[in-house]
Image 1 (cartoon, rainbow, N blue to C red):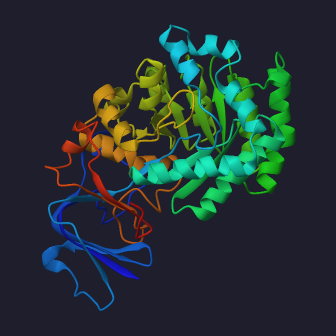
Image 2: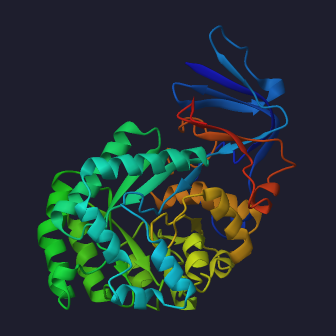
Image 3: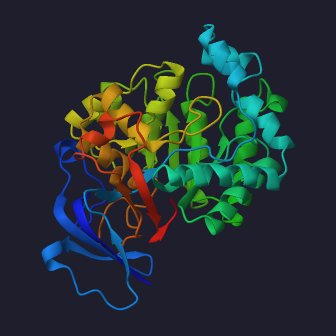
Length: 413
């Protein structure tokens, strides 16, 4: 079926020659078309241009009026933990009382508290709750999402989580990539034996995950109190041998070396980066690894701010992600994430939009499918309410300025 969106006040983030990502000064540029149309056929973008150039409307074509509104690509969210059970609001109160992330983890909270609940939950229970979150983020303007495992920390439960993510991929309109994060923490049964657990991930989990084609990527939490650079190196090497490209949780809690080992393995992205500095920036320059910052976690945990501004000024690309999870970022609202990119990191509105669309698509390996308005890409776009312009979107950080959302050409809100 054909759809044509007409009388668009401004069609934002159009690409006539699609790119993999934008970096440095180019992040401050967003191509826009005033008084535009957008044509969709079979779930993909067929054409776009100015209203004066629009094709004749064929019989049976669905016509969508967008007068006075902006149209832009839906957000891409390249770092989430969307499959989980329960919530952790008690820890939230503990944080307010002054306990650190590490102190809560030592008391049995943090990741391990969610691990216990996920192990107890049935696959159907996990699917139902994750499907609800998928519907939630779609309604908030996200059209593509990466989903990690990592709350199982044993073979049975990690596979259960990844099967849920695969089922979401099959049933949800969202573009979904999946990541195996067996090395998210050391499970209680391996307490004091982290190296042995890393061996179990390498020898027992990775081969099965790869054989069942349950994951696109492998991730490791390389940080203080979690996995060392040496362990991360072994884990990423094992994943690479089984066809799983690397991603890394890096430099959230300390100068862990996670960025450097990520670059060594040509990681698709290195994420968090709150404790990154000039050495990490220099390591990333010239690489194809996307630095990805998670402002929701920074805000929620009151962490130092990743040097996103310095990265852009140095000529690097930057992506934004929500880190949607029950402990450190219980929100997948990419509208808010884009606003926080401007508020916390002093990104320009154009930079924040690029970081939440084309660069975020690259950080999840989906830049050829989503992330911009380009011919042949999936017809994932949103229509705003009447707003003054692009700059208004991150400025109105508490407002729901989205009126309609289309994924694969079909309206989901």
